[in-house]
Image (cartoon, rainbow, N blue to C red):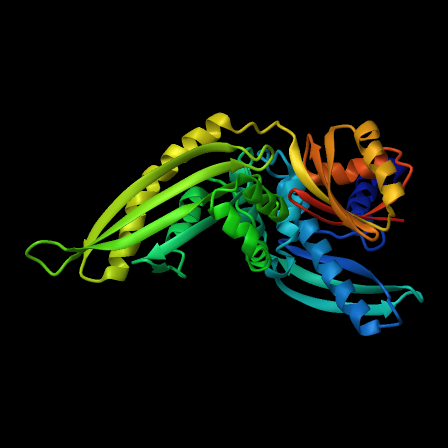
Length: 382
């Protein structure tokens, strides 16, 4: 006759088989070589179901990427600033998803739309992005504006700017997103002209708008010095001048210049190679000064766009930002129109840290967080 003890091993084995299937509840995503099943949510505006579905799908893709990101990060020990990693990776969501399938899409109420997807997220590309962010941690985010000429004509190919950015990126320095820079260049021609003309305050304002921490401003002059004696080679000469401006203070952190020359039968190729000779020694000198002089722990200047408050309530908010929000060193008004105002907040932390504290500091005016990007934050009064 078999006793109860005889069945215990089989009982334990059966439980072991059952538990994995019961481990998760609801729609909680699970990763498996980059495969996840997640649900995206969007608000239905003006009964527009098509737009709501599109937004819910975008949200689902972001959730999928963030879920896989979490599993990748948990296996690493070199990620010190998870929020920066999360923001950078999430901004590339569309390019990180290899394939996806919509499992269901429904309006779950009059105001909310859900889209459930099964997606394959590229763990390799996420890892590459994480490594780029890790390499840049502790180094200021940069932006470059150069006045470039080739044989006294505007160089629209921007060979010096491209080479400078490439050299600094190779050293692990992060740069402001190119689309952001292009947008600023199109809408701030007067400021750019002033900055290139030596106005450091104009350069600083451009950097704040772009979310940069340091801006490199200067000129590149490349021209022919004539033929090399006894040959058909043309000697191309490059002279590059750069000043490095700290966005937080508006002061020049360092400045330098460099010369490069290269003989070539093709003047365009010679110009490019002359620049390539000038930039590396210039980069080495600037990097040495930036690493020595730039203080990673200093207060950041964050552009805070506030909407929904009249001037009187805005004045109250400005006072409370200084009094109640830990880490705020100063609040400087930069202009207002109607119920929209721009403030510059000197804050010990990132814009993401500031967003968190605006929600938890007991402000009289309840704020809703909008777009958050490096050194810039949009909020509206509830």
